[in-house]
Image 1 (cartoon, rainbow, N blue to C red):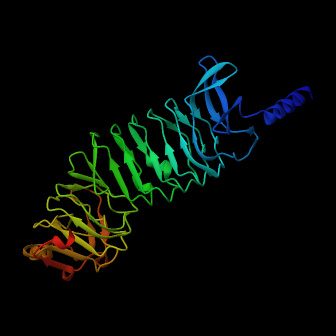
Image 2 (image 1 turned 180 degrees about the horizontal axis):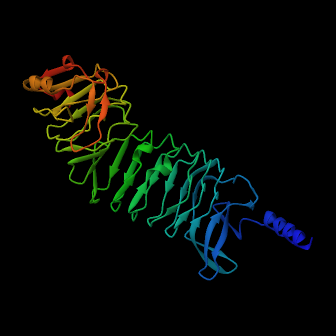
Image 3 (image 1 turned 60 degrees about the vertical axis):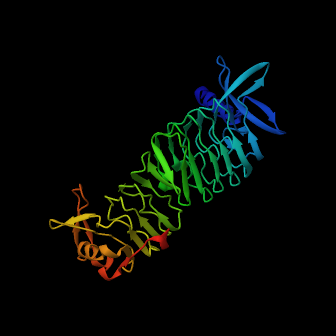
Length: 349
């Protein structure tokens, strides 16, 4: 009986415990903190209320989190934003994080439905799960200058993020395609891994196209000098109507156009067809498209070569260098009659 009573008292104490250790007023708003290391004098932002009864915070406008805060004649360095710290803050519109923030906890900004501007610290930050869950208004993001990689999936709930700028030190960009409404990506000119042209992501030399943002619509022109388009670079860009390919192109995955329901035209500036697949030992120009009436525009002198190379039969096709065949129906291929020859490509510039 004593053990049961002690357990009940402990549970009651935990349920009534405050989530925060102290409060600091910033710009007229109360910000709550947990002491994470008393000896090192570090703290993290947390929420107000009981641990077992978290309620939405009432922050509004833009909030600048300080690098250091004072409590009981001690100065604490702010090193994190705790789980659910700003959860439900529907009137919070912007957040600026100081240097020294090393982690952002699970669902820290969950349901911040007005949050549009985020300035991260320059140093590397560890992210929890669902940090920006149900934050659909994010549109202005400043990534850390010392970040080595970024997983853009953390912003996947936003319908408003149209442009992302990649700092100089980032060497890995993951899940760009998780941003359905992204229209353009820009890279610092000092980045030694990536480059951009017209909002498309390339390797540093510009010879390899890594990706076109999913929200891009209308026409795109792949930069001259591009030799290879990587698998998946274009495949989810459903709003594209025209893709203009450079004279330098040597490699193109044949499935890149298969989900572009609005695609009307593909322009090949090269005078020699790009052989995208093989079938029964024959190299062919295969374009798997969503609608077979897609127009193929080529140099007038190259029409005969493109017609001879264009795949026209149902079959199992393998990409150059690949081993796994993909079955493609005749209805998923443009007809040779859709090949149009032009004397000049100026109309597409």
